[in-house]
Every structure is written in C-alpha cells, then in structure tokens.
Amino acid sequence: MHSSDDGATWEVISDGSGPITWYDIDEFEGNWLAVGASGATASFTLTDDTLNSGLITGFNIADVSFINESQGAFVTEERVHGKIFTTTDGGATWENNLTLQGRKDFSAVAYVDNNNIWAIGTDHYTGGSVWLVYHSSDQGATWNKIDTGIAEHEKTNNLEDVQFIDAQIGFIKAEDMLLKTTDGGSTWNAITEPNNISYSDFEMISFQDEDNGWMSGQEMIASTSDGGTTWDIQYEEDGFGPEITGMHFLDSSTGYVTMERGDMIKTTDGGENWTELSTFTSFDLNDLHFFSEDSGLVIGDGGRILKTVDGGANFETDYSLTQKNFHAIEFTGNGSGWIVGEKGTIYSTSNRGGIATSTEEPLSSAIPVDIQLNQNYPNPFNPSTNIRYQIPSSSTVSLKVYDMLGREVVTLLNRKTQPAGEYEVTFNAGNLSSGMYLYRLEVNQTVITKKLTLIK
Picture 1 (cartoon, rainbow, N blue to C red):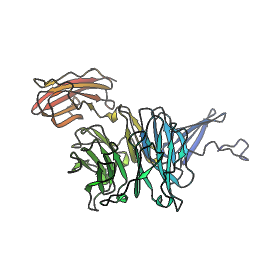
Picture 2: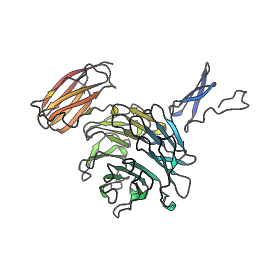
Picture 3: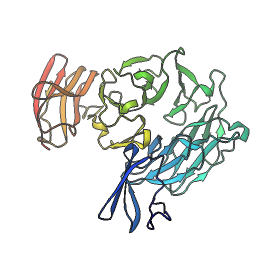
C-alpha cells in the first residue's frame, strides 16, 4: 500500500497473486522493490502503476498441460481461490485468466488443441454439488462453467483427473465415477461401473486412445481395452505398501509407476508382471515422463529430479534446483518440458532435461560388418553434439562420458540388448564445464574410446 498524505489515505498497489508474505520494501531514485516469501519480488514506480512481479503465484500448482512448445496452462490448488494461468510463449510470461472466489480450487487441466482447454476442480464449501468443470475455446482468454448433465445429488465427490484423446473424445475421473464425451464436451455420459472394481479406488487415468487406457489409485492399477466398459486389475498392494502417486505408459505393454518413499515399479508385458526399481531415495516420488522404454525423468518431494537412460536400472538424482516439492511434469514432442510444484514453483527445459536423445531404430536397414564408434560432430561443440556408432549383431551396449581423470560424468546409453545397426545419440553438456572429455562405447567385451571437446 502507498500513501502520499502522511498516512491519512492509502491506495493498494497490489494485493498479491497468491498468499504472499512481503518482508521488506525499499526505494532508490523513484524505483521501488518489494521482496517476500517463496522468492517473491515486485518492482514498480509511483508514476507507472504497472507491477512487475517475480512470482507468478504463491499457490501450489496442481497440474500443467502443454499442447506445443508455446501454448500451455496450469492450475492451482490449496482449497481457496483456485486459479488458471495460460501462456502463449512457452512460459516466458503467464496470464491469470480465471480466479475462483471462496473455497474452490482446481485439480487438473488438459490443453486439448490450439484453442480448447479444460480444467476441473472442487467447491469445498457447499454441502451439495461440488463439481467444477470449466472450458475455454479461445486459448484461455474466456472461460465457461460447464454443466455435465449429471444429476446434482450425484456430484458430491471430488473431481480428480481429466484427459482428452483429441478435440472430441475426453474423459473425466470423479472420485466415484468415470465420465466420457465423444462430442468435444457438449455432452458427458457416466460409464457404468464394472462389477469387479470400484471407481472410488482409483484417482488417475491415462488413455493411449479411445479404447486402451489405464487407471490407478493409491493401491491399485487396472487396464481397459474397450474404452472403460470393462477393467482388469493389473497390480494391487496389500494395504501396507507405499501409495501410488503417478503413472506413465508408453503403450499397452510398457509402463512406469511412481510411489511414496521413493518406490517405483515397471511393466513391459501390459501389467502381467511388475519389476521393482531401485531409485536410492526415500523421498516421495510424485510424477514422471518417459521418452522411450529406456529414457525418462521422475520428480518428487524436496525438488528431486531422477534421470534414467537404461529403463530404470540406474538413476541419477539431481536436487540442485530447489527444495520445494515437485507435483507434475509435462513434455511436448520437441523436447520442451515443464515441472511445476509447491508455492508456484515452475522450471522449464528445452533439451528433455539434459537426457541424451537416441534413435530407437537403426538409421538404415544395412547390417554393419564390424563395431565402430565415430568421432562426435560437431567437435568442438556447445552445448550439444551427436555420436554415431554401429554394431554388427544384437549386443549389450553402453555409451558413457568421462572426464580426463577417468570419473564417469554421464551414462548416455545402457541397453541389455540392442539389434544390429547404426545408431546416433545426442549428448547435451549444458551443465558441464568447458574442457576435454572421453566418450566410451562398450559392446559386449569390446571397448572403444574417443575424445570430445566442449567449449563455452
């Protein structure tokens, strides 16, 4: 607040964009700066009432969704004044498009196409209907509250998740119900609950297409191949294990699941069998994204980011960004990604979080006659370079980078079995210092080492 008459009257310069506690304010030659909790900053002048804020929101971010590298949205929780923010420049700037009044918040958001966005939430005050379903058809500029057509007395449990396969087909997971639309949200129909499961045991949905999908709860995972008409239980805890917090399925066969206390499991046969993965952390893991069967990122409490390039056999943990809890992770096809979490925390990447990218299929159909490791190109490089290699037969393959003292810097590839062919890996060294490094290819018992130079 500011007064120009010795405190007789006051004007509000800003009421904040969230529950921000301001600690101090000072002025130098007409320029004012306020600083506060969670890294909040605000600068302004008294001749220009534009407030330049360094904190997008002080609320916890529940979910984030991007349709491409530019257009995205996130929603906030905390059971009060739920907010929807959108961006059209990849997160460089965000606009608060909608703020709910009272004890209302959002739990999930889905950016469907260039124009349409859906957000779901809960009214925590009313004793009757608690469902909040909002839709925007103009990139978030305006929002309409949607009536799903479900009877009021049936809308007394929280909405939990929303997903659209395309502009017409979408699903909403309520606490005790699963809804589906086939006409872009004009009408919603409740899918009859099968006899072998209870919708109340599940919270998250993940559909690959209209028919094939997964649903998980705190202790259970189920799959469907008929659009949710029937479900088969694929995994079930005994009630004493850690709760399930996130899932990511690449297809109907391969999927990864995060849990509390650092636990993870993996399936490669559609849930018939599950393998426990060792993450070597006791912090709760909250969400994940995998680019392929081998390469993926996992996020959790305490700002943990876990990286793997060998299908979860090994994890590299990074917790240097923040100590705030991460809640959700989202990626687009070109390697652009975002992590959101506690107290308005948002981080972005343009190179898949520094994970090396590799061709999953051979570059050509020709079968090489011997093992080769090519010189990286470009070389010298900054910050990315490409490494090609070839193998004449199906082999165990690893590709690692070392410093000149022989210390391992990063594992680019670690495959138990890779078919014969020529492959290429992109190595991003954005977090490394300038200098010379060694990259080493190991194929069965054969080892080849070459040098590369990073110049920043």
